[in-house]
Amino acid sequence: MSSATIKLFLPFGDAKRLRVGEVSNWTGKALAAPRTELEDLLQREEAERAGVYFLFGTDPEHGDALAYIGEAEVIRDRLKQHKAKDFWNAVVVFVGKDENLTKAHIRYLENRLLYEANQAGRYKLENANSSNPKLPESDREDMEVFLSRIRQVLPVLGSDLLTPIHGSIKTARLQSELHCKNKGAVARGHRTEGGFVVFKGSTAVAVERPSAQAQHPYVLSLRKKLVQDGTLIEQNGVLVFTKDTEFASPSAAAAVIHGGGANGLTAWKDAGGKLLKEIEEG
Image (tube, rainbow, N blue to C red):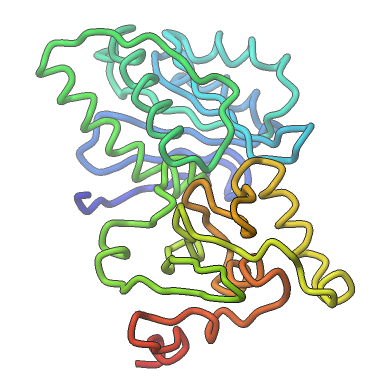
């Protein structure tokens, strides 16, 4: 990904309120706001343009991060319609600075964004399908550049919706694969910018430690959630990870694998037996 200078303007001087983001030499512009600032966003002239938008919130039934990705020829009109949706508490909009974004362009962007969000797997999506419009080759290239800027700006505005679970390519390339073993369970993973990822196919113990209920109830709750959402399934006496899964820290990952509290800096080792703690101390 190319380097970028991102300018963030705070119309009200508060980073929690309406924000406007731009990238040097980019034809697009981003606007982000909490739901409580929606009217201020809608009053801006950018809301009259065509673009794509994200609604972010929480699934009221399961507590999972939930997002909606959409497109509109007039952003203002479409966002007004979404006031009826209760789940979302933040909105991010991307529009063009000129009038060059057509209906076909924004449908192409919506389709690509839905695909990448599904691939990242960080959010449940309230909408999963879109049309796949055909664009001339030159237009597709232009939209891929626009998409690359969305990938850069979205995390700055507070969302990792499109960020790969594995972390950046540079992060993955510089690290050795680490292993965590306990009572027949064997897991593989590495650090990421967001914490620690455990790779698909890794295993965790099926039975928690007797002391975990009193000493580490959070671990039990997390394991239960991972079982309920299908991330962990029982096979041959162990729990198997069905997908790459990111945890807040190496210790959180190790605790789930061990079925109780664990120090991730000593539980994770490289192929030569070197502890994560020793690796990071150099």
